[in-house]
Length: 261
Image (cartoon, rainbow, N blue to C red; front, side, top):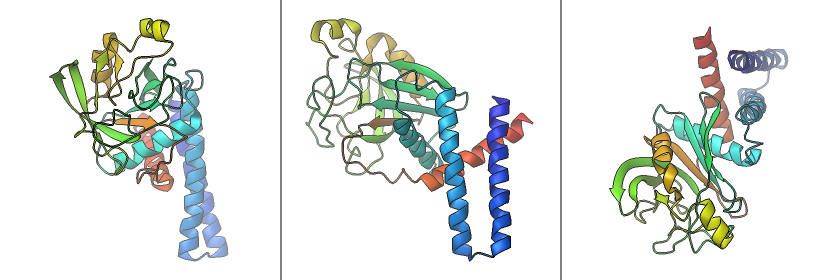
C-alpha cells in the first residue's frame, strides 16, 4: 500500500512539474494555465480511481467502475464541503443490478478494503426484481436516487435503524421527512429469493438483511456517504464536480504519502 500511495503521489508531483515547466516555456495566459493544470489533475484522478477500483477488487464483486467513479467523486466533493466525519467509508447501493445480486458495497477507502457486500432492497413501487422508477415524494413507496449522509441511530418498528439525510435537491432531499432509513428486514434474504425469485421490497428504504443490520449500521454510521445509483434515470448533483474531487483526492494522497515517510 505504501508503494501505491507513493507512486500516485510521485506521478502527481511529476505531472504538476511538467505542466508547470510547460507554462514557463510557452507563457500561457493564467486562465489557460489553470485549464492545463485541471486537465492534468483530472487525468491523474482517473488513474487513481482505476487503481483504487482494482485494489478493492470491486470488479470481481460486480460493481461497474463508472458507478464507483460517480460515487467516489461525490464522496470527495462532500468531504470538501465539510459534510462528513473522519470515517472514510463509502457505501454504494447499485440499483443498476437486480435485487438477487449482492448490490450493496461498503468500502473502507483509507484501507482500500471492501468491508461488506450484501443484498439491499428497493421500494415496492420502484419495480420488481430491478428498479425502474424513483421518487422523492411522500407516500410514493419508491426509492430515491443520489447522495445521502448517514444520521443518528434509533430504535423503531424495524429495530435498530439508521436515519439518512438526502443531499440532492429534488431527488432525495425529503428522505428524512419520508422516514427513509437503513434497517434490517427478513425479506432481504436468500429464502425470499428462493420463494419469489427476487428480494422483498421496502417502502422506499434501503433495507438490508436482518442478520447483518447491526454490522451494516455500525460500519456506515457517523456521517458517512451512501450513494444510491441507477444509470438509466436522469440524475444530476452538485457533488459530481470531478475537478474538485481530483484536487481533494490527490492532495489527500500526498498527505498520506508524507505520513508513510
